[in-house]
Amino acid sequence: MDFKAYLREVKAWLEEIKFYKQSKRYNHEELDDVLKRMEFFLNGIKEDEVTENEIISLQTLVKDTNERLKEGVEIEGNMRQMYIPIGQHILPNLPYPYNALEPHISTEIMKLHHDKHHQSYVDGLNKAEKKMQTARATNDFSLLKHWEREASFHGGGHYLHTLFWESMSPKGGGEPKGALMRQINKDFESYNAFKQHFSGAAKQVEGSGWAILVWSPRPRRLEILQSENHNKLTQWDVIPLLPLDVWEHAYYLQYKNNRGAYVDNWWNVVNWPAVEARYEKAQKLQWKPV
Image (tube, rainbow, N blue to C red; front, side):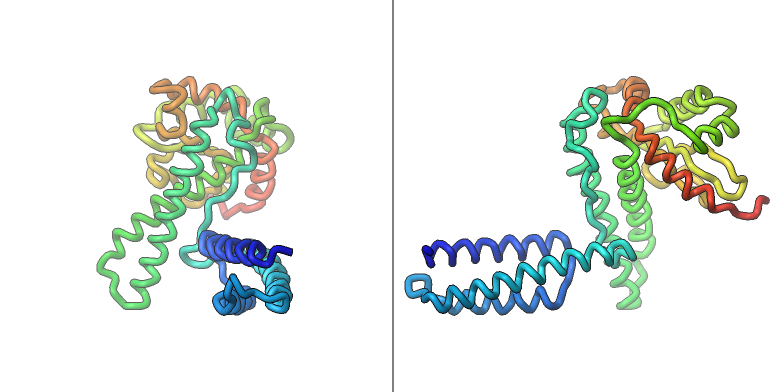
């Protein structure tokens, strides 16, 4: 074994792990402990004088680090299924490649939309949550109005985009089936009427915003809402099922100012099975009609 080369590889690997921990924003005390021990050990090794015993000890630390790293990822994954700590939202991965929705939505748009725009909403929400946490800790609420507004805007952007990605598929299109189709026919008289209503709402959003199919648990029916930005002109007490982003960043690079063509083509990638699954869960929530 080339001891010097192995030592350099381990040092580079350690830096990658530290960067990964920071970017994923998760904490695992046992992993932190073994990383500190490894860093301390590496700092005490002279590259030109490294011994076989030192390499053996280092290999043991690498093994421990791998085990703790695996445990940390599993623990973090389980914890994130239960709750998300304040200021620790992360950008979800796309459930398909960037080019999967071609030709209806271009690769360039998907990269920009997901990696830049959605990431900015995640960052904005995390910052707002942390600022409000600091306000509570210091009993200084002088800027609360601003940070509440930021949390509303960026939180709406993050959650709607997360749902938006899941609501599309390269194998999408067609029409819904089963209980969702029956509910659509009941509430909108026909699927065609629903589609025309939804498309009209999307095309007529003033400025930037969304069209959203929602389940309303109090009247116990489906509704179509518009939302300006991510958080205006909406209703409380509803559950979003199918959102369509009509901000210009969602289509302009490909469709220019022809929002209508983008909306019409978007129906070809709607992931109806995912919407049906959300509806199945949402419709179980029914408030007392008033």
